[in-house]
Amino acid sequence: MIKTLIQVLIVSDMTTMAYEETILAVLGILGIGTLITTSLAYILEKRKQIRFSEQQLKETRYKIIIAKMGVCMNPRYLKHIRFQPEKPELDSEDIKKELEMEWYNSWLFASDEVIKTLKNFVGEPNHINYGKTILAMRRDLWNTKTSLKAEDCKL
Image (cartoon, rainbow, N blue to C red; front, side, top):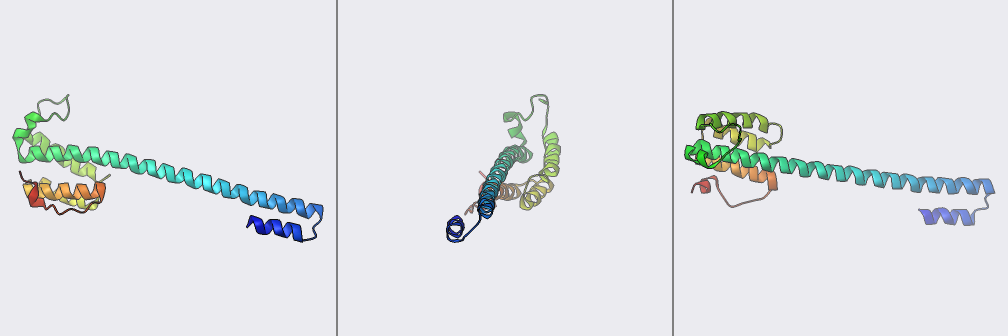
């Protein structure tokens, strides 16, 4: 494009005023291109940072939810996990209520599949629903295919 404009300037019989206007037009186009490129680079970098933050949030929340799900299925795990230091006297019923709140909170960040499988787990805590929820979380976080099945989650 620039080469063509320069050729036009050389070939055509232009007055000094027309020549200056053409140069200003070319410089304007170049300036707009740089501005657009810089703006796009900034927007794309911001989106990348937001996606990274969202990914970190999901991973942290999912780890906490998985731990609470484990306690719901096996209350003996509670003595090995400390969720909040200011609430040392939690029992398995408290954890079940917190897991229900996690389900409501998950509407802010989790995929539809995670929300549905977590709801099934809260309604009926068992190893199959536990495995389905973990697999849904894994797909939401990493978008990976796996040969694992929900039944494989049981030790």
